[in-house]
Length: 284
Image (tube, rainbow, N blue to C red; front, side, top):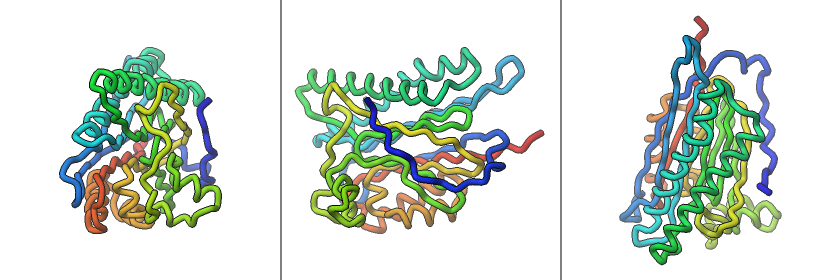
């Protein structure tokens, strides 16, 4: 069974959810200032259109993967997982939505995204066996249909929600240090500076029995989702992420400034930022 930790409590105005949303998204990935190669990969898919004169549901799929394995294996792992995952989402989720003209329920969406990730995991395991490799990748992904975001993660790549000036981490890190912080055995800042901060206990490509955490979030006008690898959140920290998200509205400008901030802080790892803005659509 998937682990589904509860979401943080977000204070919202019930009247604000009215109206259609348009998805605007951008991404940037950078090797950082220390490593020569870049084992991160990002994926953006956005679909919009008209069916029989009416608007079809706005759909998007967004993902960040942080590869592991060295000698370019991490780069291969993150890229191949996103390729297979994107294809699975198009086939299993987008096709269904286009044929029915509406989004499925929350449980179905979480289950479908988990199944797509496990299918990509199976493909990576087959690639491992063929290449006698132990390459793997962390992953965070967002499936967005008609204003509802289904979020998933494996490892310590994160998805955040920025709403009304407040930043909340939606995903939960599958790392040793994060588990010790949650248990009250370490202070919260240990995720940034503990000597074992990079030790994760779950990743894509680790085993056939992959567990995926999933979450559901209804988006509101002007909400922003940030998907990122640990090379961003470790360097910029939550306060730095929030400051940039508050200062910029264009997704590409946010991504560019976040990468610059991570590099200014040391750029110790590969850096990836993907921002999705739920832009309000004026009624005609």
